Structure formats: C-alpha cells, structure tokens
Image 1 (cartoon, helix red, strand yellow):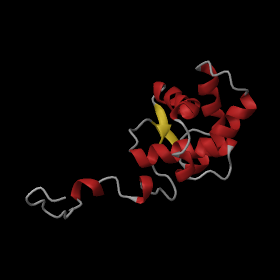
Image 2 (cartoon, rainbow, N blue to C red):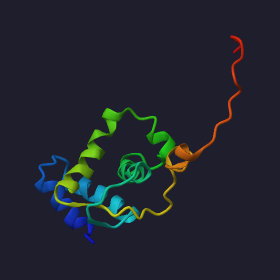
Image 3 (cartoon, rainbow, N blue to C red):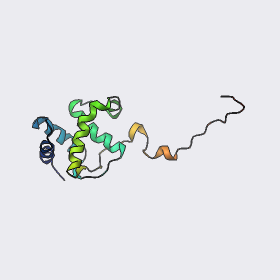
Image 4 (cartoon, rainbow, N blue to C red):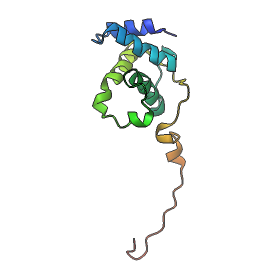
Length: 125
C-alpha cells in the first residue's frame, strides 16, 4: 500500500498544478478512507466514497447526498485525481469504511426488486 507521500508524487508527476501541500491533504484524506494500492475497478458507491473523501478536504461537512447536488463539472478535478492514479495502475482498494450504497439502495437491488403496478383497463389510468 502506498502512503500519502507516494500519492502526492504520482499526482505531481502527472502534471497536476495543485500545490503540493494541498495535494498532500487530498492524499491523506483518500488514504484515511481506503488503502491506496493496485488499481481495481470501483462500483458506483465506492467511487462516490473516493470522491467524497477528496471533496471533504474542501467541504468538511459534505455528505453523499450533498455531493450528488454538485454539478459534475465541479467534481471533475476530484475525478482527475483518481484518473491520474489509475494511469499509474493504482487506486483506492475499494475497502472503504462505512461504504453505503448510492442513494441508500444496494447497487444490485434495482435489478431484483419486484414492482407491482395496477393494470390499466379500458383506457383508465
């Protein structure tokens, strides 16, 4: 597993213009939420947690719900940090503490959920 200094070096070598002290805060936040190691694909909830860890450096009281209210373009810098790690074959390990599913649902629940709806008869709605 990498420490935050290694992560900062990767981001710096990728050409990230953010000052090193700021990158260090992002690296510490990400590493505190999940160990940084070999790249693995994250599911939506894990990616949300990784972005939230980075986002909380700038907005400490942010939650998953408030994160989802932020326009995607405003989160692009945080996504770029994760992409810079991925280009080096690294990333969050996925073992986030307290990983909750996106919007409070299991990622697979929608595929298995039964929905009963009344039948429409004779043009009635």
